[in-house]
Image (tube, rainbow, N blue to C red; front, side, top):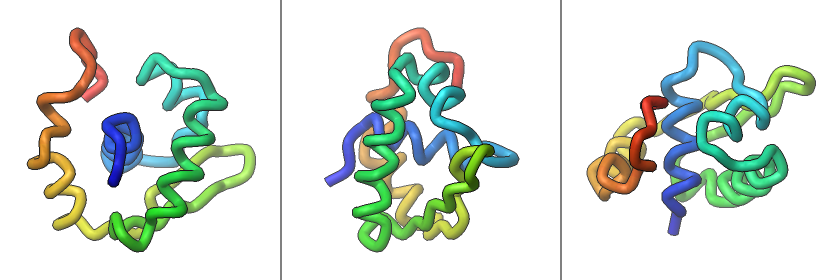
Length: 91
């Protein structure tokens, strides 16, 4: 299973034009860099199940390299938009 926070991180990376570092992701989601890194680690462990491949670019951040868009759309349809943080203008 994937958490709402992990869905939010994937959504941010999917919408980004380039790599995002942990600090930028954390600022947008209101969480610490350390929490972002832990969530990314968990996403990487589930990458096959989720249909995503994250690339870590040292000094630049994280990039969503390969995406099964059908699976990401399923994440959205399964409640991502209803569960986002109130007042968030990030998405």
